Amino acid sequence: MSGFRRGVRLGIDVGRARIGVARCDPDGMLAVPVETVPRSDTSIERLADLAREYEPIEFVVGLPVNMQGADTPSTTDARAFAAQLQAHAQIPVRLVDERLSTVSAHAALRSSGRTQRSSRSIVDQVAAVVLLQQAIDTEKSTGNPPGAAIPFDEETV
Image (cartoon, rainbow, N blue to C red):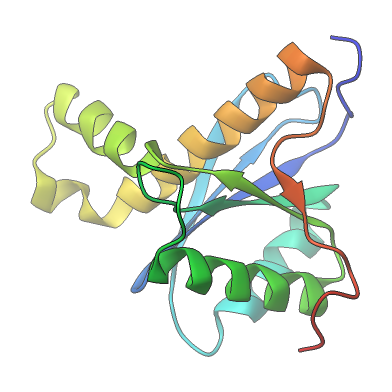
């Protein structure tokens, strides 16, 4: 476990309608769902409130690139949201490839017997858990923080 930075992290799955939030324990043993935040003008403030509650060392925000690794309109949206979040909460943000997190979340919920309709309220949280767990596992196996950090001076919001 050399190179793993100890501390709570909040995983954020940014969607057009909802934002899934997950967290992990300080040792990065397990990512768990926290809540689904409706996407609105108050989303950033709610995430800042969660940050004050859990005191994470960073936010891990999923970057929804397409299967070829290229940006999409959702990627641009996630980058802008992440920059606003960092500027408002004053907590570092790392952008991590989340190509399959929502697909994995839907598959996990289906295999547990939930229908697409009954899963809608929690699929975003499960996607956030998947992307955060992947980020933690990546850092533990490589010794390097996952994804890319957003520089604090990159954007003024």
